[in-house]
Image 1 (tube, helix red, strand yellow):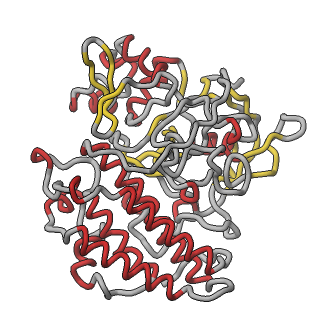
Image 2 (image 1 turned 180 degrees about the vertical axis):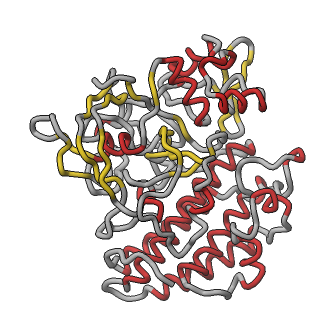
Length: 442
């Protein structure tokens, strides 16, 4: 099985990551009392996966790719039920899944075998470094998928314990000016870890542009709604207007009008949208329409990456050579730099976390809310699928867009500045909003 040769990782680091990912999964997984959902709700397939299927998929993936085993604790049943290439989403809701305890036992057994494989001190093999890190990445992503499922299904929020105080900050008004230059878009073989759709790094010419220092807020988006944005065909693309008419959309996915006021469903409760928090759970079509209404545009993913990753040159006239894995540097997020890892329980004000500003001064380009880009999800030049061939290739279909940055429910280690989130253009279950660019360069 061919795989990317990433730098070796200490065994202790991989063991700790496996244990930490498991604990996060337990928090994200709905409890037994919250899991009567094993069949289609109201006869309709929701956008999300059943949380129990996500749990089984983690065990299947760690066994198949972490341990590189064709069979084992999950055996044939696991391969048939939890391989996403064999069981598509509608069938996942219709399948008779093992119960929570059976799946947890399977998952714990696989995890323990992985940890035993990594016993002792020193560095893991190059092979284990890649495959175990990949297994942790998939578990982290499934944890966020379980949180999304809780939202879609109206289940209680995960209990992350006492919430930390949010690091506040002053608003950063207006656009940040980014100069022209050639940006290396995509991964290098020397990077510590990457997913296959980041391969391979290639030169991308960036023209001067201006990008908003902060994401679009609920207050910003509500102005579009109040200005009849959903009923003005001129603001929508042809496909977007067709989507809006097909589902009858006249407000974001989880918003409702009650006693003349906008409210939003937040897991199993109804709350007033915080004006200063980012708009969330909107489709690409809605983001595009808002931009037309505001005389703005979505950033291309290379532009987004430049604003998040690069450091200004001394003269600010050209793109500098320095590129960062995170907006602030190479270290994974601290609680003062980004709203990630569930530490704050949901979205917070777009002004928060000034310590996490990018080199160019853009705020929250990691965490709080995933951000739509203008780019369709497609293969980079030189793309080669990694061992899990069904991760990216099925989404190179013209119906998926690129999300960047991560959300409050994303693990800090799971979304770096080059990470490309994948989302169908017409779906709003992701914890996704957007920031915008000026039509003309600053």
